[in-house]
Amino acid sequence: MSEVKYLTEFYHLNEFQGLDGYKKNGGYKELEKAFKMKPEEIIDVVKKSGLRGRGGAGFSTGMKWGFLPKNNEPRYLLCNADEGEPGTFKDRMMMEKAPHQLIEGMIISAYAINSKKSYIYIRGEYDYPIACVRKALEEAYSAGLLGKNILGSGFDHDMDVYVGAGAYICGEETGMISSLEGLKGQPKLKPPFPAVQGYLRKPTIVNNVETLAAVKYIIRDGADGFKKYGTEKSTGTKLFSLSGNVMKPGNFEVPLGYPLKDLIFDLGGGMKPGRKLKAVIPGGSSAPVLTADEAMRATMDYENLASLGTMLGSGAVIVIDDSQCMVDMLGTLTHFYHHESCGQCTPCREGTGWLDKIVHSILEGRGRLQDIDLLIKVADNMKGRTICALSDAAALPVLSFVSKFREEFEFFVREGRSQVKGTQYAQMHH
Amino acid sequence: MFQLSSEGLVEVKKELARYETKESAIIPSLFIAQKENKGWVSKEVVNYLSNVMDIPESKINEVFKFYTMFNQKPVGKYHVQVCATISCALVGARELSTHICNELKTHHGEVTEDGRFTVSRVECLGSCGTAPMMQVNDRYYENLTNESAMNILRGLK
Image 1 (cartoon, rainbow over the protein chains, first blue to last red):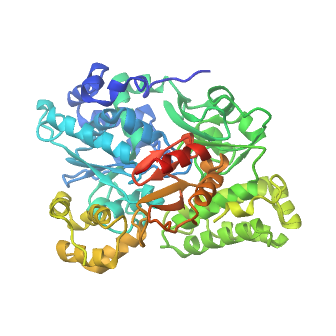
Image 2 (cartoon, each protein chain N blue to C red; image 1 turned 45 degrees about the vertical axis):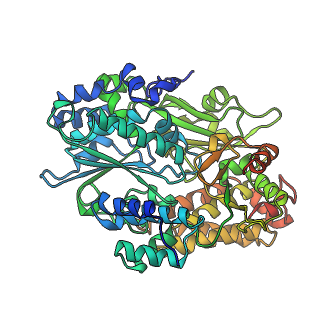
Image 3 (cartoon, chains in turn orange, purple; image 1 turned 90 degrees about the vertical axis):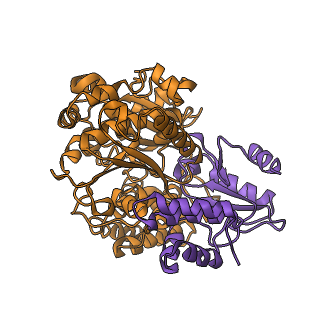
């Protein structure tokens, strides 16, 4: 099965980046169409389309919008472009290739939820995507697509970019709100959910780049047109970021429900000569790892991956071949989560540190057999006890790596060296 | 004593008026000041911003120490950040950063003797499909080999 270029149809055209080229290829047509609809009608069609948040949680976008209070309080739209989930690089491509697609989707969404102000929160390292979006915003303002009385609709909307400064946790929606407010990017307790009390305690909708861009196509094709792709409960297409040990890494747009095997072996060109598939992380580093056998029967939709005990997450597929040591790879992940824990909740702050210490003591040849069970015990104690999901995200890879590749961990402890790599692992770590 | 250039000061004033609350200007102002202070944020920078922005130093400190893009100590003219998170690690990013350190005769996180380079290993930069990669100051260099990375670094003025 090949790709379905639904959102990415014109990404091969350089001109699609600028306003003129974007308009030539259908750009801002759906904005005009949306202005002829009532805001409630837009929320309704988005609900019916079955669109689910593309950033990681997979929550119904229409339902999220429906949580806004029915009053005239000012409300904000916040685009989550903090893409930080290891393995994910699709939002970056979208902002580089089609910044106006995002802006159009955002104006339509803002009109639907009656928001007069929106921010695109982009991670600070994304220097080029930031420049692309800023330039597109200037073009949109000059063309009367932003500001007062957009296209004579009577709807006013201002949009700005906010540049993050390097913190994974700001991809969590309440962490992002804290960051935008000029604070440390620490998540806030929910409830109240951002839709009720978000940025500056005002109702706020936070949606991912891909989610907001998809809104344009729901307006174009209607709920049924959008649902033409995907499965009953996982509707539409999705961008998957494929990385790691494959011949052709990259972003691929396919219908949800696409076989993971085809993504790796067909679109991704398969393994390097002589190498075998060992494991796959199917939804960004926080998603539990799949063994090669499990990966070969998985399909890329929310339900199938959940039935395999993992998740679709951000759509980042990380492929691991048989030359890799799973203890070593888990070490890169425990290091990541320890580095990125915001430090607010004890189970996460302390737990991520202990997980990293224990895995590294094994990597340095100082592991004891009981450390393997200790890893499981610590990880279990980090689940469901904190303000946000980072603690769970740190625990899940540990639990899945250790339970599915226990033999490798035991070998490492017993022999003091990697079953796969011999002794050359230690200097790899910090 | 640290002081912003007149252009930098104008930019900070603009940021102060740009958002709903002035605290939102702390991150953008720290970026402006860091750029003018050879790539890092010193105590003097925080003190200066606190005065210009009329925001307590404690609030600025708390923000600047939370985010990794603000450097808490001096860095080389070129800050070479090699991503070492899982997708990059799978294709040899850690070997690459070690190679760069060896070639430049330095260690991770230190400034080279000539003041030109600091090599750091960092967490995911969203370049997983074009790994291994490095970010040199603001710019990404992707699909690197040991040789191409060194050619890029040696070619910098």
